[in-house]
Image 1 (cartoon, rainbow, N blue to C red):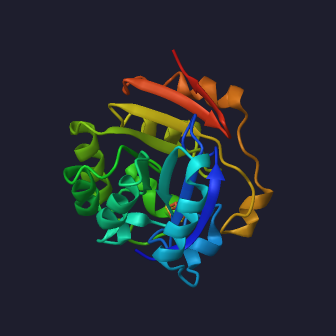
Image 2 (cartoon, protein in one colour; image 1 turned 45 degrees about the vertical axis):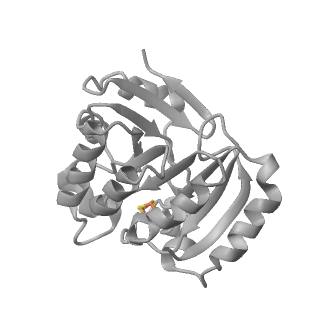
Length: 232
Ligand code: SF4
């Protein structure tokens, strides 16, 4: 897997954990609100050896590994990398957009991940618009979703409330999920499309009001930065 960047310690990628975060290089989507534009466009990859050395150095100060992106599942060898990390006796989380179900299945089958977060960007008919992509591969996204919902792996589906999603869109997206669904705040910072840095995001109160209308998932949560709340 090509690695674009890493963070030695972050509390923002796995609730309650201090994570060593690895960013896979490039993405097959171009979500205008994406907050890692440098990664999505592609950077000079960092050698895995260097990452492992860094992890070794800070190992005592972290309690989890998060592999995000970009899109980590674009790389078929992701399970090999995840295995390397899981051998450090740290739980591993992968965050994906769900467009590579075969890689996702492989990760679970090989038991090299402990948690999977998958984006569910929008109602499927709006996927192209919300992801800034002509061919958003929604069949594959549906396949990944179904696989996760039927699997034993701990997982969640995340919808970022993009400025282009109406309240109705958000409710429709949430109701696609059977297991755990998170409505996440859009942060107008460092966006892939600079115009989105000027757009407004919803308040946690507005998010909660809409999240309450979502009835199909077993569990519904809202997330704004490090704040996460289960909607009872
Ligand atoms: S927000 Fe969109 S463009 Fe950015 S990494 Fe995720 S899927 Fe890719």
